Length: 276
Image 1 (cartoon, helix red, strand yellow):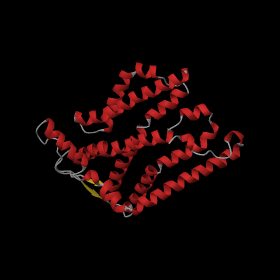
Image 2 (tube, rainbow, N blue to C red):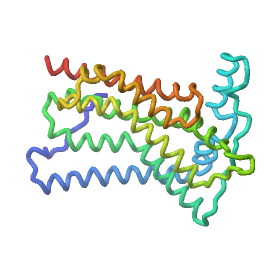
Image 3 (cartoon, rainbow, N blue to C red):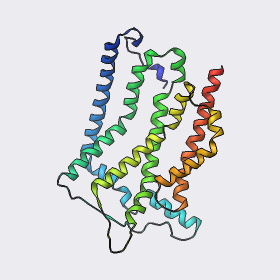
Image 4 (cartoon, rainbow, N blue to C red):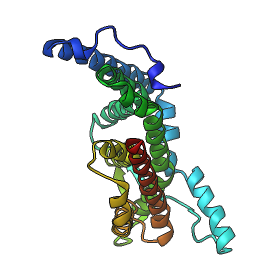
């Protein structure tokens, strides 16, 4: 559905004063906050699904990602070199309020993720009356494409980056004399931050679209510095995937480079529309 099919607010920001703008913005912020809180409450009430199935999923050796890695290992090498046989750590909690506070924290993160399309739509409703017909035409599909890229990034972070990082870091030892007892807060923070950050990174084509619209960034510059961008992507992939094997880093670098190439296509399309 095109974004311009939504009804506009009866009062146009072009006709409103400063405080009327603030009041209108306040309404959209309140709606967004309420949506986040409602979704967070729903997530909070589903504790077993939230923790046992989702958050602690990458801790199980039969997690989807580990199973696929094992199948790939047998197909390519004929061995089980990439098959995960056991997790090298256990979770612990040393804070009396730790489990409850982490429950609240991850419920809020879940609320933000689930309500992301609605929050973005509220932002669009606020700025849309201030745009001309041409700007509205070019921004058509903003909520749909931004939400799609965000959720794809979330899935990629959860099913690819997080399992690879958790399995490597959780089993890494400097000595057999030291066992890995990971604090619950550390595990939840690491998993949620990495997953959420990946969702934000996947918004790169949308950012490039707006930068190209205002003339700050162009497809020519991005093509010119493609080789340097590839080096940066490889470095970023090495940082985001602490596992030393090349397979993990390539799995991270390929989607990032694909996003860069997609951003070039987006910038080129913006330039063609400007010429027309």
